Length: 113
Image 1 (cartoon, rainbow, N blue to C red):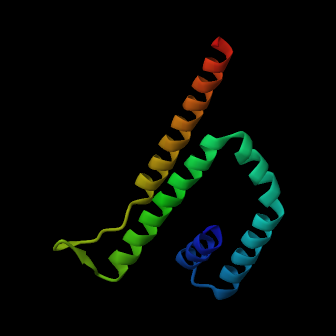
Image 2: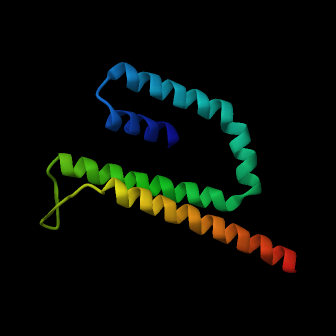
């Protein structure tokens, strides 16, 4: 999933083929190098796994809306408009803040018990 997402992001960000190839290769190498560390971190912090899935979901919605807009598609007789970058970053910011607050709340609950 992450590799496919990286390819879509590289295509969406630039028209320079060499830059896309370099970005995809570097992203793939980082994923291979960091895979074990990320797995261990996620085993210890399960809520970040859910956060990552929500972020991927929002990225997918953004890419679909962008593609639908560029293809001049309509959904229920309404033109598809791309998600604004401000909305995207706001949603990501809110998700991260909620996760931080929830993690602190869980830690306080464990201390209290």
